[in-house]
Image (tube, rainbow, N blue to C red; front, side, top):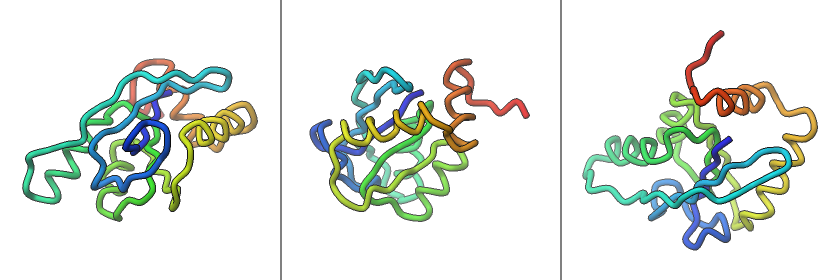
Length: 129
């Protein structure tokens, strides 16, 4: 499953969703994790709604985005696109987040996470239920 991180360097989750310059995208499974790409979050949109939309478009296809902070309107827009925002509230190493996520994936993940994992396997983010 694809997971995005708001990070200035790719090493730590250390930025606010609405202020980050890029998203670091990883492919994460229960046993493996590998970086895929870095996607620019910079937009020329002047309207806040348009900036949020541009950022959501940049990480389309991701199941989760880990960020230090995110506002309510941005979080709602992500959830509507089936991207689950996860606030860390403090700086944390990307490797630590990945390790914790993999523990959950190897155990009994919550229903929303199982659904996200299954969508990633089919390549489709369209709910079939």
